[in-house]
Image (tube, rainbow, N blue to C red):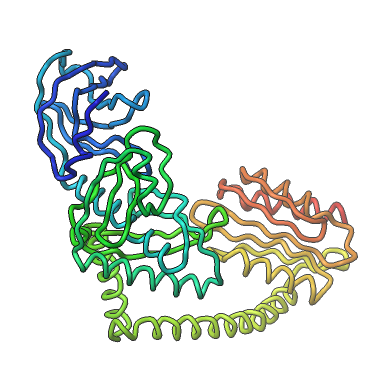
Length: 405
């Protein structure tokens, strides 16, 4: 069984150990040491990284619940019984202990204020997540989160002492634990002075001030619980820098103070919605006029107007609207295409009562263009990337329509 040095001192980053076992696993070797300060992945917390001798530790996990295995690249020539110097990546260790200690503080804040229990915990690459039994209207949840965040940071700023206790299960049962322990032999309990008692095997700060700051980024409903995403310490600093740069950039572009940026964005969004509505109205008006102009000069096939046009970089919605206007304003067939840099879009339509299948017509043209198409007998769309075949495709469609009429 590996002696867990991180249980006793989360700030220990350099230590000596003896290699108890070497596990060959292809390109990697697993080193089991007689003692280690490397925290293995578990309990929602990622593992420590660092070096053993000259080998970089790429992963740390636990086998059989007892042996902690340090995975390194094969070929370093480690041997059983060898004494080796080890070093933890302190920046990563500090980041992890800030997040984990911050989770204890924030989870207890939710429990104290609202009786909400933490049912899940994960430190991800970008933030830390807790799943809470917190149910309320979204506006009330946001308010509850603000209150919990405020209490949690009060505990951080108080710089309270954090103590580690190793107790028996019977002794643990007498402590005011926030959650139940299922360990049957020795229970490691993390105490935050006059605030929280939790069984936990992770790395933690020595005092709450080491967490620096706890900042909630967002929340969501997940698995019938409230999932809260937050950052602590160095992550909170990085998150603030990103948010500050973005808000400063927005404020500069809007020529307003940072506090007024939100109201300015709301105003711009509202103005854009109004402008979009007005644009749609104008597009409807102009499309009717454009459709009539095209009908007036269109070829007459039997008793139907044959409207054919190829546009450059016309968006699909505009093309569809024009096709509808043409077939609504006259007994007509609309064969429209938009030529873009790397493809051709097709929209075919016909007026009601004409015995023509636009679905088969657009499939025929799309195949010539090296693409696909389909739709209803009265309206279909398609296209392809073989732009050079657009003229041949439209000639073929016209001949098919003439034959069908």
